[in-house]
Length: 172
Length: 252
Image (cartoon, rainbow over all chains, first blue to last red; front, side, top):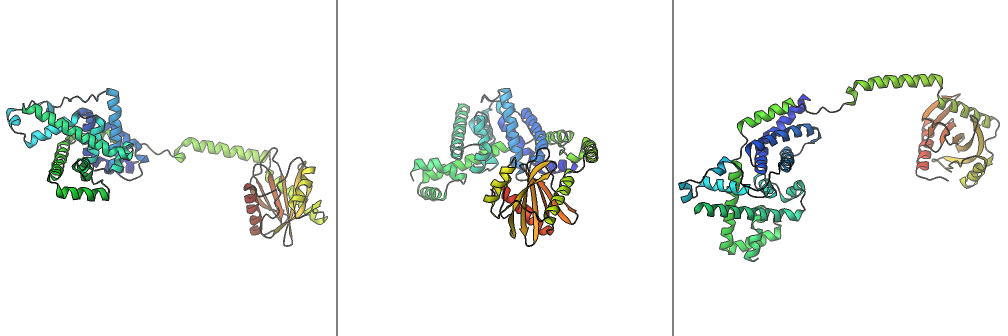
């Protein structure tokens, strides 16, 4: 049992950043994301016996995802509203309005991202950050193979539109 | 490829998910279309921004400690170990005692049947009364026996290589009419007694009684007792392929 615990820590703990990032994108708020990661890790430990090697990162990410979805359902939390997030709620300063700095653009991205439906956020992070193939996305998200490409296209389109809206608003 | 199409495929291209033909087509188009080329660069930059923006979400420093503490508080689910359960041993001791008690009160049924079968077999040899119906053909033997018994014994003409049916007769074991099927293997005579299990199914057993080898088994439809002076090898040939033929329905 000790070895199992040690093996769990060795295999799964290194993916904490990825787990948090996904949770943060799905539930948006930092504290909620931390709770979800914690809950997911406890679940993972209990299920670790059933983990027969393979991709530990993908495995923990799917547990995080499921935990986040349960949480979202329980809290009816996904209204695609702009979350209360310090980074987002800082009113743009004079300088940032005059020129879109690199930092501003990153902030705009995050803000726009937060407005997307959760399914879009999820597929974008798994594809562009985690680098999953369409095949992996289809099987993990239980999507028909053809849906992955169209969902990704729509997600990116949506994100571009949201960013454009934010930029337009901020340039006024 | 037209620009419209190329716009549709650019992200998939960047994902590395176009099939080869589409990829070649798109690349040809890109090489000749500066506007699509610049769209490609724009999309590439967009991704870079996306990655940078999302990567700023880093687990807070205290999260690892929190998770680690939570995980260590929560012991990994211990694999359910059958042999680590104390009640298993208690149950086993009780079960074994019950078995021993039953054995003493009710002696080994297989042994009893085996003894009787050996007596019947040796008597039939000494009196040269092997069979009442003599035929190597199950089609002849089966109806004869079925008419004189309250069940239809399964008839296998040649259970294994080297064995041939001599015939059958009706015998009595434990006050019950049973089918006695007689086979020959070289000069060895083999008696196979069979009857439907009324009360008990015979367990698989082998023993030697008075110089005979006796094997018992049951398949649910019939109890079997085989008596012979065969070598163990030949006896197992017989019992194994007999079982297989019964199981696969290759009998009359």
